[in-house]
Length: 358
Image 1 (spheres, rainbow, N blue to C red):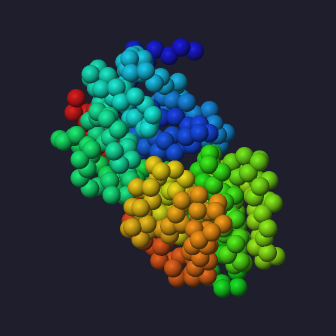
Image 2: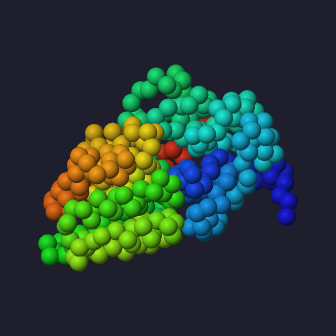
Image 3: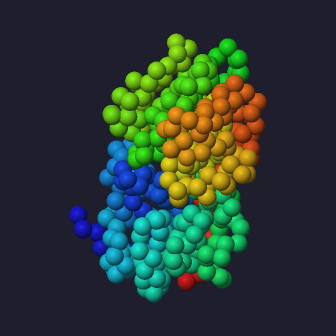
């Protein structure tokens, strides 16, 4: 069925979200857009995802469950602008590290409000609103154009409803020193750098009794994890990526993960988190959350894969976290008090206000 978007009789705001997901870039950009779409739709906007999100399978399921229309989103500035005009969009949210910056200029030239979700730098994008949820994003940055509205920092973290639901659920666990610590280890929706096996190896090297749930993005990774040596009091369960990760994280005493946007979800839920950088682009966010005392830092993934001092240091940090419940509790408390989960509401209010002001 062909839908004539431009001739729609609806007068409510029509907003496009331009983001992609793939095994190479992961699903973080689309997940942020999903979070924002929940709030925009709650405020009465019609929302469409313009992009490529064919994998992973659980992400497709989430899109279907939310009923969010998905339309192929072009990268070419003229094609993207033509599509936005044909659809009668009032605004476009751009969440991409690879989209040509000319796209934002072309959209604005067509009278379409542009909001850019960025991570520390504008990347030459032009926008009516910048959303920078990275640690320190509320500071004044010289890389952003002067006079443009910018919402930044932990207060504007784009948190999904499923994460908020996990945050609100009371913790029924009773601290028992005799019960092994439950650790969740995952490195994003696709784990493109094969980080989970390296992190699991470091956790097992602590020698501390534990219950470990490891998320393996591919069967090969699952086999590699299953082959790692563990002591009799270290139990390892390997699972496929799941959409109910917030609820799974809520039941963990410690989460080991990459320094991506999912860290903000974990802080919001109130979990103790240890983070690893898998790419150089994650270093600023890593330094921010570690410097703010919200997580424990394990350094770069290369250190976990090594067999020298870097690995020894990582193992020592993990051993301390596994054996000191008070330290885990303090990290969890700081995270939950810093990321309040209301970022989508604040961003959606600003974006709808810009649309209404046109």
